Image 1 (cartoon, rainbow, N blue to C red):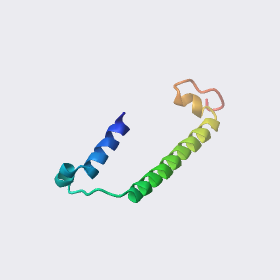
Image 2 (cartoon, rainbow, N blue to C red):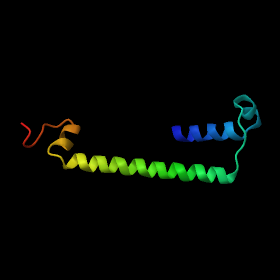
Image 3 (tube, helix red, strand yellow):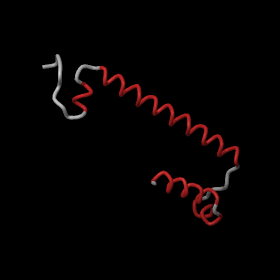
Image 4 (cartoon, one colour):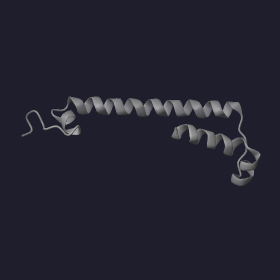
Length: 78
């Protein structure tokens, strides 16, 4: 919901003449929007991959995964 509201606000600020006057912006073309979406997609995928790698590394450590959920350690770190 928050992302949708932010996207609508961004479109309004970018494309509505009244908002252009208030914020000093100007409409941008389809090619610029395509580049924006491409960069955003790449960034989103990189962040998701980073999170996945960090979680998988943490789960392989002895007891690390259990402690993150509040459970008692089960292994050699007593």
